[in-house]
Image (tube, rainbow over all chains, first blue to last red; front, side):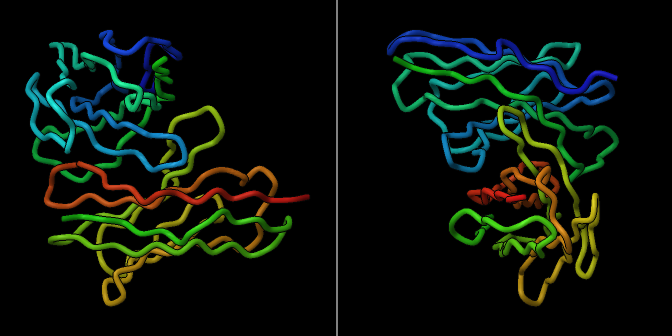
Length: 116
Length: 112
């Protein structure tokens, strides 16, 4: 049973560029959340997708956007990259169907994004 | 809003020593509490959880008890191994939204 998979593993971009990160949730999961983890810090919540809609959003600018597909996979897009966007981006999935909340989230290994 | 506070600084200890990592929280409603572990170059793995007051989560020799009166969820292990070296994060979610708030994490280094 595959867990949460993310691609690519590493990515190097320059300031002003745009990037797309991808996530496939664990089998049976329907909800995908994205987190940004700066070096030496805890993950910060970016947003969450359920039923192909953004359901919640953390304190991140509109440069950060996302999408969820009918197969529950998800993308995170970041426009106009800044040096401060350098971080590990983590995807987490969980099952929220039937109103089951506060379920443990399963994390992928992340995408390491470096901005030059 | 929701927040989690972990004790400052890395933790270095010898093999078979007792480990405690403190975690306190502020939350609306009745949060669920979690400990996650992150090994070098990897994502986060759920270590244990507790969903209501006085619940004790346990896994792989680690334990943590949900203390509502002190708003704490301290992580303990009686005898650590070198393989326990990792970064440990305390986290919570509340309000039925599955949105995790994390502490800053504690680096644990176990010396043989």
